[in-house]
Image 1 (cartoon, rainbow, N blue to C red):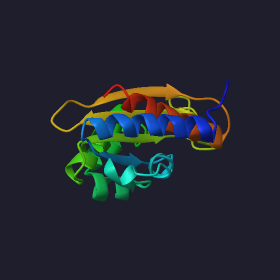
Image 2 (cartoon, one colour):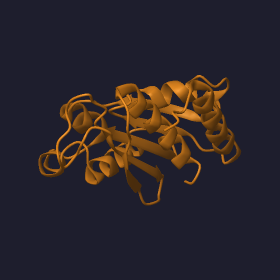
Image 3 (cartoon, rainbow, N blue to C red):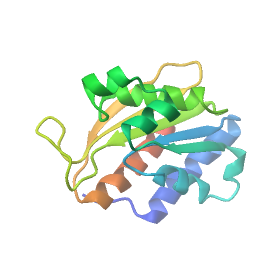
Length: 163
C-alpha cells in the first residue's frame, strides 16, 4: 500500500479547486474521523476562498445532530459509521452552508473503536451536489491512524472529481 503524501493530497486539492472554480461551485466539508484534514488540505491552496465555503468537524453524536442535522434515531439504529449517517451529514452540510457541493466522512481511524462488523479502517464517505442525490461509499483502509485518515482525505478529494 502506498500512502498518499502531502504533495499528492495537494495535487488532488488543486484539481478539485480548479474544477470547482470553473463551474462556479463552492465546497463544504463535514468531517468526523479526519478532524478537519480535508478542509485544511483545500485551504492550503492559495485562492481557495474562490471555491471553499466552510468546513464542519462533528466528532460526537451531539455535534453531528446539532451542526449537521443527523437524526438521533439514525445514530441509535445505524451508528455514526454508516451509510445512513454519512448521507445525513453530507445533506446537512449543504443545508447549513452556502455551498453547492459537499463531502462528508465518518469512520474508525483506530487504533481502538473497531468491532467485527466495523473494523478499524472502516470509513464512509458521502458526496452531494445541491439539488442532487447523495452518493455514499464504504472504504476499508489499512494501516495506523494516520494512514487511515490520510487515505480518507485522498478518497474524499478523488470522489469530488466525479460529482
